[in-house]
Length: 370
Image (tube, rainbow, N blue to C red):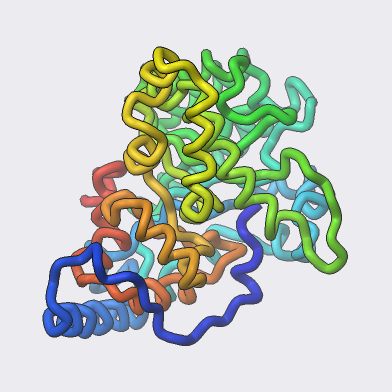
């Protein structure tokens, strides 16, 4: 599930971030920010499908609720979220998604299924839901050319079913990549049982979107729904698992995208990096030849939810290169317009704003340039 905090955060102040990483003078930055603010305001006023269509935002964190899947699994979805009413899911539609995109100047959205996913230890049923959702997303892309792409859902931890669905999603439906959750059946993504799946994704040079889910630590806090804390933690756990299992190094051709600015990793990276001491030198050379931070900087991260958190974004900008950051609305949980508004206020050069809005995603999804 998306980071539901986005529904309750209304942060209107200007964001400030460390300047030391950026060379332009204060005068040039002010000028570029003025230009960026003007273009962002224009983007908010113009429907993405109209005048500014060719330069609109590309949203890589945008969820869908196919009607058959949603009606059959509504209670599972509600139980996983713990915060939103069922009408949020049953009321979703392609038309509503487009309306929200247009309000924020989003030209294209690469959509995905989110937590709780499609697998509940239910064998063929999970395979059926993967196929149903993937075909729904593929049809969306056909019905609204240039507006939608999709990360295909696969029924992990069912390895055989996942292999079949990877082939169908990419070869037959021609989807834009694959979407995974951060853990399955209590196992993080670096677990050896998932290695054949990652090897196949690497062979295909797949763009892989990783979204958090609830995997452990069901310690309840009155008034605090678990995803608010545990989703970011599970993203960090997935990053550590993929790094220290050697999956990142073994699968260099997978183009990873992680949600919410990398979860809590930017805040605790030095703690996680210290785990390298638990490995022999020859093991370190094999699994993390350049160290954890260098490995993390290779991958992509969306700014869904974290964009509204100045402290969190300061950590993101300190750890991660701007050319690895992607726009994420977290729709329907996050507001498309709120994210767009906050992005326009980042204390960054106009070129960096444009990179996060669109240019970085175009390297991964060049078909949206048309």
